[in-house]
Length: 373
Image (tube, rainbow, N blue to C red; front, side):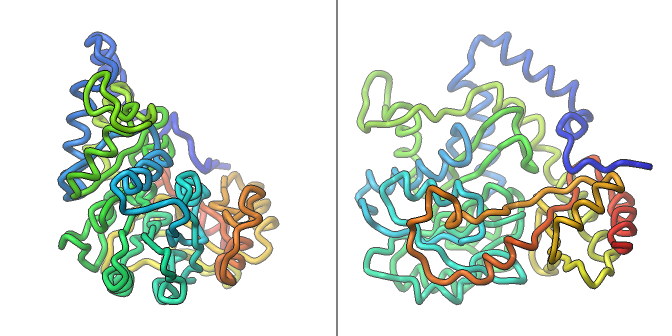
């Protein structure tokens, strides 16, 4: 019986192993391990990919979002106690970045078809303390539409994209600057290069992308102990820098990102076309947008037996995310509006294998097993 692991990073990186080793050796031999050429070039390449003016490499995706919000506070745009609207169906990092800055997360329920923030609910969540909206492009599906932009413009709100899972995705609706690529749609975006991402480092890494010159400069200073030049600290900052080794690893992988996303799309299409079990609801494929399929998430009532059945047939699965942030112990006291869709989907979602080396033929074989459940 052929086995299909949910994710094997060694296998995923195997085709690039020689390039990765050479890039690591080049950095080691250079003697420059921070603030070097690899980071500078990666920043330029990510900014170009996202069609934005600035990219600042940072330590991880959570820090990218934390630094954006902290920078807005240093710029006088946000203050302690201000509110940021964020989808309830997301990884806890999206919410942690808000509360860590002394801001209040305001949870918004999601759409069932996209599993992303439901922009139709935004008007009802606005107060006089609302300062920003943080759409999360969850699983690689862009969370962007005209309603989101209307609310932001009418209330003078910043839009901060959590682009941790959707690098390379494209919306069908133009962003604030007329571009369509996620990461360049709003006022700023946080990116994660966690190893499991479509563009993953061999350790932690992240980036902030923006067209705002002041925001970029503030984030860059905050990430480097709050200094704008050596031994001159204008903010009480952090140590949130991206190191040269990880930048070099990402630069090896970046030219292959489009191919990776295309392959994942083909795998998702194979699942979509082949799964016909009425007990299993497949995610929507949207013709007018470009999804990156960081995860391929189906929905099944009584998912524990479904996962056990697939495991018996050598098919690995995972859950992203079984416990929403507002159900986590650290946020039990967080007041929020009713979140019926988020809470129902949290009990049903199951992620199927989608990353390399999974192929469309593999997806069809997995679908055959699923159809027997």
